[in-house]
Length: 640
Image (tube, rainbow, N blue to C red; front, side, top):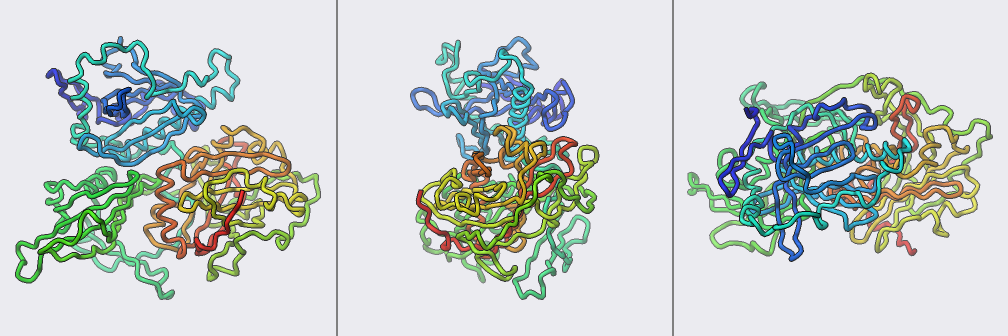
């Protein structure tokens, strides 16, 4: 007997197929129960499964969209035509390993066969011919699949780190490939009508209600829990209620910066008995029959254009039938940009736009729509805090410290004289960030960060035609200068910002003593790339700026090596980390929003190494930087 969440798919031959849960969910988003979760996916085996759409193109260039059952077993992924739970003897049509070189990224929303789906792309970093795309019903489900792939990738890395036998070693040939030739599959033209029928199914997928559970623990690139890892200062005051406090709408005003003379920040809060994914889908869909039920202004809307899965342009007509005596017909164009937060929260920004496809229309008054923010917030979970302990035995105590004179190091971006200064940098304390405490593995408790271990001595703000790696090897780099060569250790962070032109924000952190090889920093500096990817962590915080940008950037710690592509260069007395922000569609979308408001933002960043084992706890902050209202035009041209 089917479970309450079961659905049925009717194929072209009239047969019915039962779907456990929702199309595109991961086995009702629960583990298969074969073993426990373990710690970070390194100790146990994890199984994820569910219905997705397999997207691609055949040899003659025809695009297809096939309903498939995807099964992730440990570090292996298998694709079936039918549910193997209901058909035990069925064989997978594709199978492969999710190796350490696999890159998985969310591409956002895409229209497929008259329906909207959320696409995930993955490819082998060393062999991009091995690649593929799958699609899910909602952005939340897509993120769950990304996390499942990431957990499988951790399984592969764990197997390699244990020195498994050559038979179980991961090879390039075994990596999953969803676009290559499928062996032993013939008579593909037989039953083609049936395949086409299934391929035209996104509208069926989108009609299913989401069955995602709400208390899912995050196992992806970001820290779990709803609280951020940077401390924000807001003082919200309720100034009005509509239809009562319970079940109604409350209007809040931020009074924290009232004396600063800035514009007023207002938010409306209402309780909606639905998941954030469901609310997001309702707001984003333009189907007039659904919008008529709740939207009094933008019910008659039409999609004009869309970009990169997270941005589109909409044309809307408003006809006041009952007040035509006082109001004329109006039309307007607005663009929408949305971001899924690290905690499952969605933020949608709507602002006025123009488009050549929709010039002013006779009989209608062209109007600009006011900027609107839609935040959909999930539950909260409070953690206790305490004073963080500083790092111990990270630097070699047997060596006398050298004197670091900041005046010897001059970067293209100057050091500021306080928060009121602009187009400059500073190095704040780590007390504005929450990091893992000594007992984190037992109680998930985080503590307030302390002073950074490394000293930020210089910052370069560069513009170039294309992203450049290994900046520390450039003759004009701080690392190659005489004062730089005398430093015991330098950590170089090269943040590559995708834009036109491209930008690089290069941070130089110096240590006054050599790094102890047995410390967590020593293991990170001298470890392999897989180890570094699983430990390199960044915590962002928008100290001052637009609320929309704050929501998009978030305050949760992010494993950069898992979220974007990072390259490492270990030479002499330095380690350089090149962070390709453009390698992720989501990160590209967020940084595009940030660049639009960068001249009014104060941004704090903290860099640290994630403590996964008890010997690595408590965590400590390697370095911080505060960027004060950076001007894009001030970037210095860099010639390779």
